[in-house]
Amino acid sequence: MKHLCQIVGIERNPSTAYHPQTDGQTERVNQELEQYLRVYVNYRQTDWATWMTMAEFAYNNRIHAATGYSPFFLNNGRHPYTGKEPKPTRSPSVDEFLETIKQAREAAEISLVKAAESMKRFYDAHRTEAPEYKPGDL
Image (cartoon, rainbow, N blue to C red):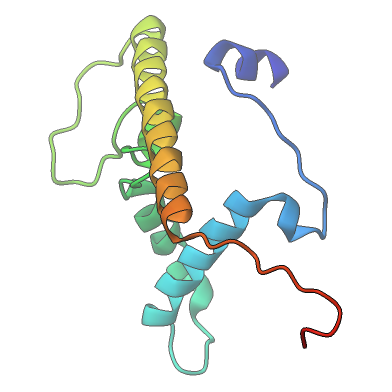
C-alpha cells in the first residue's frame, strides 16, 4: 500500500482515534452525510442503513467548490458510470490514468489554494481587533 501511495502521489496522514478534532475533513464528510440522511430516513430512523450507499454516492459524485472536482474523479481519474452515458469500450492505460489523476490533482490543488485565499480575504475583511481590558473595566 505504501508503494501504491507513492506512485499515485498520496500523502498518508493518520489521525488519532476518539479525537475528531484531529480529522476535520472526515468530520465534514460525516456532517454532509448526516444532512443527506435526514431528508430520506423514515421518522423512526430504522432504515438509515439502506440509504447510506446512495448518500455516499451522492457525496462522492458531487463537484466540490474547493477542488472543482468530485472526490470520485480525484480518486479514480474518471466519472462514475451512472447508466446515462455509454460505457467505454476500452480500458485506459496506466500511464493515461496516472496522467489524468495528476492533472486533476494539480487543478484541485490550485482550486484549494484559491479557496483558502478567498476564505482568508473574507476573514480579514470581517475581523475586528480584540478589546484590551484593564483592571476595573468590567
